[in-house]
Length: 83
Image (cartoon, rainbow, N blue to C red; front, side, top):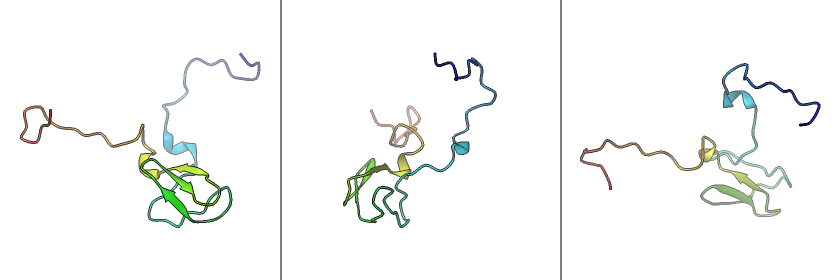
């Protein structure tokens, strides 16, 4: 272990992602400037947006909450239940 790292095994508080601060990401319905070159031309995919000038890739804000995609909750036996 690195000598300057704390060796605490317990957390002082629960993890709160809202306290992490501002994260650079492509935000939909906003004017986005590239952090690498300053241009605002983007190639938007399903999970990332890539700058058309310098190829800097930023995650989309719609996928910031987890592993990508939104969970689908259904009740077993309901009329809209899919196998």
